[in-house]
Image (cartoon, rainbow, N blue to C red; front, side, top):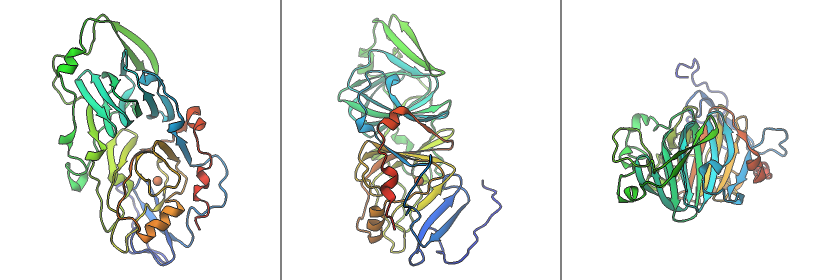
Amino acid sequence: MKNWIGFPHREGKHSRQAHVDLPEGTYEREMGKEGFFGPASHLYHKNIPTGWTSFEGPLQPHAFDTNKLSDFGSSPWNAEALITNAHMKFRIWKTSEKMDHLVRNADGDDLLFIHHGAGELFCDFGHLNYEAGDYIVIPRGAMWRIEPAEKTEMVLVEATNSSYQLPDKGMVGPHAIFDPAILDVPAIDAAFEAQQGQDEWRVVVKARNQFSTITYPFNPLDAAGWKGDLTVVRVNVRDIRPLMSHRYHLPPSAHTTFVAGRFVVCTFAPRPIESDPGALKVPFYHNNDDYDEIIFYHRGDFFSRDNIEQGMVTFHPFGFTHGPHPKAFKAGEKAARKETDEYAMMIDTRDPVEMTESAYSVENKDYVNSWKGSN
Ligand SMILES: [Fe+2]
């Protein structure tokens, strides 16, 4: 929407710039299009925009506790889907078992985010270790399996019928946030060659969301080498160096890590809190009504949320005004904290998502009430 016909109008009491020097006694809410990129207005409310006393009907924010889900065995195809649409599948997989077969996803790229555990991944392109905090992008069609050294819990995000790409970093240039040179790729190394041989191997292929099994009288992960720019890549969240400004609270879109056709994946990593006296120090209240928002909480103290623990997922559907929880807002106003220590992954989808029965089975139904009493 670059050619939007509007331009910033001003009416009544307002600040001169977004998120800065709010008029005394007001709460700023951003109403925006296109996920913080499109036309937007900032409204300066006399009451907290999330200060409702009751919230009824099907539009609800949700929180799910994946810690309550059990193990799913040794195949990622047993992973539990929690939130899905035609373009994205958000799944949780917990396993301690070495996979005795290979898998291949013909429906789309998979993004693995390792929440707990460590081990080894073997794929068409070689051998790669993994540990907590790793993002691993597996392109559509690549065969792979894992051998956990420790119990492994991961989020799998399928970009159905699409491909993961790095975001355009615009005027901060390609080396900001993380330098693409840091992306690790699998190696044709001794461990890779040691697992090759003439034993029978099965490849379970997911295509059109159905499963087929192809059996070989040898291990098909038998590449002697490869060349090209399509491969499995890995980056750990500790190597993400978030954009920030001491004078301006940057929107979530500044933390974009991967982009797929109809959704983005953002990473919230530790960063200093804004120090300018006039700058907003917590996420601003907003309606991001063109996107559904899903956040997975990985590590740290989630400063803008009450009662959210590691391994939990929140889902804020479009149409739902949200912002910091009351305690976080007050703490942020006092600038009691100098930095955040949280790691979280956010998925913003351009199309509405559906929740599964599994998601509902581990839902904290009281989540909508966590903003109650904001005023
Ligand atoms: Fe949001």
